[in-house]
Image (cartoon, rainbow, N blue to C red):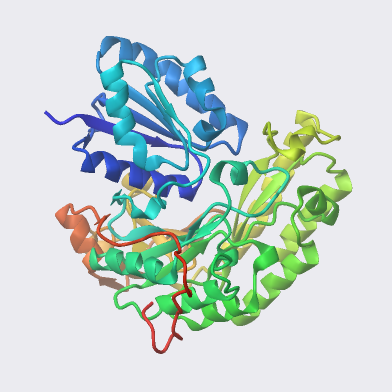
Length: 489
């Protein structure tokens, strides 16, 4: 019988997409996904190293699996991702029942490493210092029938003092535009309606082939792919954000008016210490331009509280910027010291209670603003791409859920025809209630459009991409992207 597998993912969208590739690799090698109630033959942890609690979660879960593995001869455990790249053989030292450790640069080695560990009855640790194969060349088992991730680059050339990602993911490597568009077309052919373009810093896309305007061109190129209804991207960096990207967002119909742009701090002194090469005025200026071009734009962000040396005045400045920016949502974090980063050895490490108090004040300020912004949408029409499992209370309340074009979460009443509405379908409804983190639409939908994505969901088809050439840039002139009027997507 085929061996079963389960992939457990921690961290960012990059890791989520890497886990889709891990699943694709294992299924290509003959494994089958384990049912939720079953103990799998192989458990793969795809890890994050950005925050300390990721370490604790991994080792806690590994500890829980030890007695399970003791009772199941032949069961294997693999650890990959950023924490594996960082800790390497330390993982096997702390958890000797782990069979395979692989890094961010050699995901494609996993099936071979599992077989080698099984044959040799010993742990296999393989960590490469640079990419051997661009990840997008690997087979991918997509988790969604209606929305897909598409990497446009891997790695990062920034040197933020709090971040360990560049040392674990390496320098930025860009894919050729034609390769990106080919993957998008392949997804659309499978029924996908929405793609999110992924990069550690999407704004610097094109650095490898010498075109600083490449990302804006890529956004415009998405507009010509027939059947592609929504395009998102994450994450941009304020230092590289250019006006041509704003124009491309505003002028390309299928590019959503949603922007996730990390702030990290509203204090110029803290931004300097973080080595974030922009200041609060520059950041707010970008937001002003985005809203001038797209008044309906929803802007989200990341904010770190308690960075070493942050004063009360620094924190108050962050609150000022939050109030001025009027974010629709914010991912808020307490600073986490990560060994190997410059910030870990900086003077002025703050006491936990100071960081916690500031964190709670920040959350309160953010929620006050997001609630006020969401209340402005009550009575407004909204287009919802129906999702799977977005609402924890959906079953109890009889609602369904999905995302508006601006990225907001919407819980809606399906009305008398709710039984015919499927994940991947499009519903038009009207907002009746607003909360800080979601919208409700409790009237019957104004319209329901059945889609190819809904058909795929109903048929149980899982999008897979494996036959598209998606390699690293090669020598020679870069592939040009035609203007939106003449090109594909």
